[in-house]
Length: 91
Image 1 (cartoon, one colour):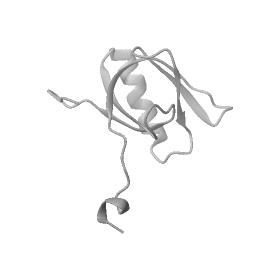
Image 2 (cartoon, helix red, strand yellow):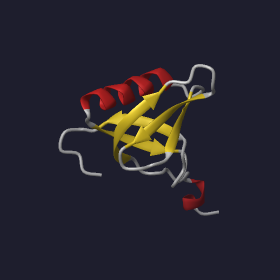
Image 3 (cartoon, rainbow, N blue to C red):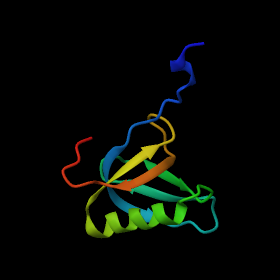
Image 4 (cartoon, one colour):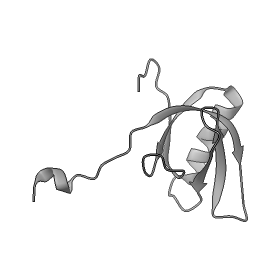
């Protein structure tokens, strides 16, 4: 077994603009819509930093500023991680 087989592939972050965040208290996730896509994306309530990620998404929506998003898989609809875009960051 090579070393490469032991390394988990991480989906790269994407710089996106939040169009709308829909909190869904009765569901297992909140819904997020990005300007760059017509799809609906999920932010699961079960992820450890859910509240922090939700706050970042809402700030991005309000400020109309880009945010970095990593999904659980390429072309997936489930958000794994959220972070602010660093000044002069190129993705």
